[in-house]
Length: 470
Image (cartoon, rainbow, N blue to C red):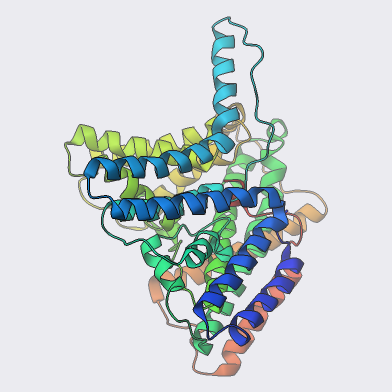
C-alpha cells in the first residue's frame, strides 16, 4: 500500500531536508532526488508497477523528440498515434480489460450463448495510472500542436512524470505548465513554504475530519441498501457529496501544499463547486484539471461549441460519457457520466442565458447529488433500488447506534465548519479572514484550532483516498 500518514510524515521531512540543504544549488541533483523520492513513494505500494511509469516515461520522451524532428505531417501523426495507443492501451489493458470481457460475457449470456475459456486478467489496478498517462499525453499532444518543445533533460522529464505529490490522484498537470518548473532554478521562500503548510493543514481537515467522518454513515447505508429507507438514502447521498468533495479537494490541497514546499506551483483543482448555479458551472469548478483536460484534448477536437446544435449536444454527451468511463470500469460510472452529459444537453436546449440565484444553486446541488447515487452505489441494481426507495418509501431516518451517533454529530459539525468557511470565501473574500488577520496570535490560534480538530475528530488509518482507485 501507499504511505500511510505516519510513513508520509517521516518520509517528507527527509526528502525536504536533502532537497533544500544538500542539493539546493544544483537543479539536476534536485530532480534526481525528486525522481528517487517519487519512485520510492510509488514503489512503497507495489514496486512491480514502477516499470509501467518508467516505460511510459521512456516512450513519451522518445515520441516527443521524434514529433519535433518530423517535418512531414503524416509522420507526425504516426508518432502521435504511437503515444496515444501506448498510453490508452496501457490504461485500457489494466483498467478495462476485465470490465469489457465481463460485459461481453453477460451480453452473450442474455442472448442464450455460453462463453467458456475466457482469459481474465488477475491483477490489481496500478494506482494513479489514469493520472500519469493523461499527464504524459498532454506532453506529446502539445508538441504535435507546436505548443511545446521537447526537453533534452531526461531526468527532469522523468521527475515531472512521477512527481510524488500529485502522482497518484492529481491534479493532472499540463506539461506546458509544470515541466518548465523542473528545468529552472528553484529557491526556498518562507512565504511559499508557509502557504504550503497552511494548504496541507486544511487539506488534512477536509480528508480526515469532513470526508472520513461522513464516510462512516455513507458506508453504513450504501453497503446495506436492503436495510434502509428513503430518508436514510437522501442523507447518505448528501453526506457522500461532502465526503467525495472533502476527500478529493483535501488530497488536491495536500498535493498542492506539498509541491509548494519544494518550490513548485500546481494548478487549483477545486473552486467551491457546490456554489455553482448550473451543472456547466459546476464542471468549471470541480476537478478542474480533468475537466479542462477533456475540454482541450477531446471536446474541442470533436468540434466543441463551434458546430451546429445537434453536433454540440453529441460532443457534450460523448465527452462526459468517456469521462464517466475514465472514473472507473463499472457501469455505475458510465451512467454517472452519461447523466451529467444529459444535464448539460438539457441546459443547452432549455436555458439560453446563464442562471443565477440561490434557487439555482440548490437545484444544481440536488442534480449533482442525484448523480452521485450512481457514482457511489456498489452496482446499478443498488442505484435503482435507492432511487426507487427515495420516491416510494421515505420511511425513517437512520441515525446510527452507539459510536455511530457520535460520528454523525462530529460529521455534522465538520460539514458546518466547511460550509461557513466556503461561504465566507465565496461571498466575503478576505473579510474576517483568520489566515490573513494582521495579528499573528489570531492566525496561530486559528491554525491551532484546526490542528486540534484534525487530531481529535479525525479518522486515522481507516480509509484511503477515493480517487486512488481511478
